[in-house]
Amino acid sequence: MEVTLTGDVLLAAAFVSYVGAFGAEYRQRLWSEVWVGDLVSREVPMTTGVDPVMSILTDDARIAEWNNENLPSDRISIENGAIITASSRWPLIIDPQLQGITWILSHEEKRAAAAGTKVVKMQLGEKGWMNKIIDAITNGNTVIIENLGEEIDAVLDPVLARAVFRKGRNLFLKLGGEEIECCTRGRRGNSFISRPAAFGPVSTTRTLRSTCRRSSPTRTTSRRSPRSAR
Image 1 (cartoon, one colour):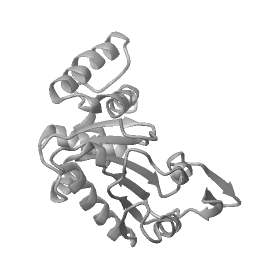
Image 2 (tube, rainbow, N blue to C red; image 1 turned 180 degrees about the vertical axis):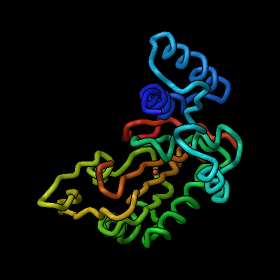
Image 3 (cartoon, rainbow, N blue to C red; image 1 turned 45 degrees about the vertical axis):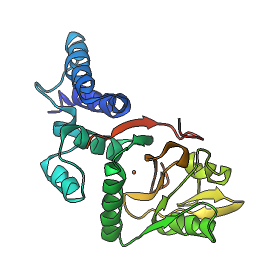
C-alpha cells in the first residue's frame, strides 16, 4: 500500500481540486481515462482499479451516514459530498433543487451535536449578528448566513482569509478591531453558507476549520474565497 500511496493520493487530490465544475460523464472520463492514463504513462505507482472517491475520499459507512443526513444516493451527489468534506477551499455549490443545502444543514447539525456545539442561523445586518459570529469563533459553533447578497461584508475578510495568528499556545483572529481567540475543539468550527439573492437557489459554502487553520445532482467547484458569487 505504501508503494501505491503516491499515485492514489495524487489522483484523489486532483479530483477534489478540479472535477467539481463538470458533469458526471466528463468527471468520469477525466479521472479514469485522462489522469489515470497519464499517471500510468509516467510510471507513478498507484493501486490497480483505484476509485478516487470510493477507495480514498470516502467509504460505504460514511456514504450511509451522508444518506441518512438526506444526501441523495446517486454517484454525483456522493462525489460532491466527498469534495465538500475534503476540500480546504471554499466550494461554490450550484444547487437548484436545494438538496445540497438540505444535506449541509443536516450534516452540520449532527456534527455540532456530537461536538457539543450548535448551529446558528442568521442574516448579516440583523441585530447582534457580529456578536453571533464572534461567539461562534470562540466556541466552535457553526454559522449559517442566509440570504446573503452578491457582496460579502468586508468585516468578514479576516475570517474568509483565515488571517489567524498565534499568541503562545493559542490561536487568534482579529475581527472588527478585536482579537478573538479561536476554538480548537472538534474538526470544524464555523461554516458560512450564503444564498445570494441575485442568483436564486445558489448556495456559496465557506468552511473554517475549528483550529482556524482554514465545510438530485448538485454541481460543486472548489474556489478560494471570492468577494462575490460569480
